[in-house]
Amino acid sequence: MKPFLPILPFLAKYPFLKLAGKFLEFEYGSLDSILNSNDDLILSAKELGIKIVESALKGESCPEIEELKDLNEQFLCDVCEVKDCKNKAEDELDRFRFCNYPIHQSEKYFKYLKLAKKMVIAYMFSKIAISNSNEALRHKFAVKEARRYREMLERESVGFLKVVISDFGIKANVVGDVFKVDLVDYLKGAVKIKAEEWKLVNRRLEGGFVFLSKRDFIRLLEEYLRERLSERIGIKMDLGIRFEAKFEEIDVKDLGIKAECYPPCMKKILSDLRNGLNVPHSARFAIASFLLNIGMSVEDVIEIFRTAPDFDEDKTRYQVEHIAGQRGKGEEYICPSCETMRSYGNCYADEKCSNINHPIRYYIRCMKRKR
Image 1 (tube, rainbow, N blue to C red):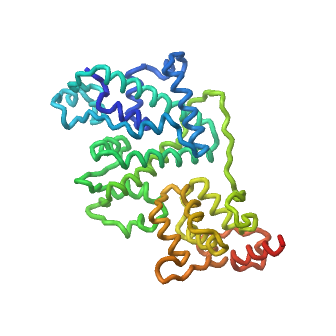
Image 2: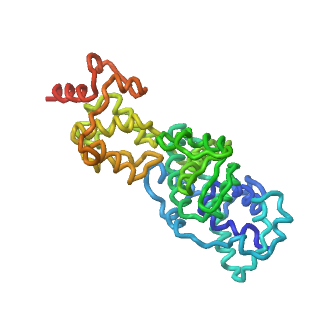
Image 3: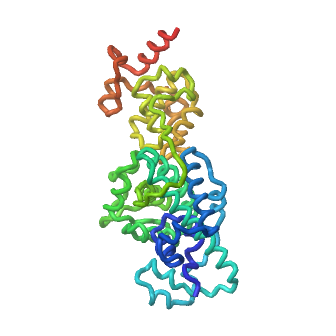
């Protein structure tokens, strides 16, 4: 028997799966045996877990994690002729524990077993580290990691995505490349996505199921993932590291164009974008038009949106170029007035906003004072 063989490469790439808990329990028995161990593999995994958190919070890539993107080895259950695993399993996912796949290269099995153990334990320590941090850091970590996993999931087969569906308890049917998602499960994730196409009225709905493409389903899955990654786990353990929140609420000097003169509303939208929050379409239009109006280039505006959870470069470029007057009728859009900003809930006025009726006027007044 080769326990968990079909899922080992996937556990290495996606250690957030609940199945990883069964895997660790099978291999180590108890959590204490991992936390109190001096085993080289576990100590190495602990260091990697810390590195994963640090890399995510700094917006950097972790080399050991990046290497997993090219891990494509699969031992698919649908081509396996051994069927007794299903008879022993308690549920659909549990069948991996009783795998008896006829692989003749035992060294390959132990290679993936070791890799899966290291990555799952590293994930566990990364969760311990971030759980002992504040809410803002947990959110930033979850946004960054969910985006990374989403990019990898887009390259996976529909067969594996069915495993992920079961793991998250999502009610969905897959027919070819069409994902039919239960209405309630769709709304649970889609409500957090602000883009217009995610409103239910813009989706095909039949028999209580919402029809999605593979790409859109994975985008929906990213929201489920972000929620799981941001959850605290009840393990208090000092890993000897300290993370400090470095979220800029008003400090956007590196954006140039006299950023100190941006009105409070624009600074708030920029802060939310930089911190990976979902910003509504009205706010995205406001900041894009404002920055273009004061002279920022299309390319620089696109870069600002890159930290948005649902960033799509092609769509963003099209929309920004349209606002800049480079598409459509060729007319540049003007930034919304203060009244419009208030009506959409995007106004964050301070005492300097008195007698100001437009964000551009605020900027011009500030620039004149500077001069």
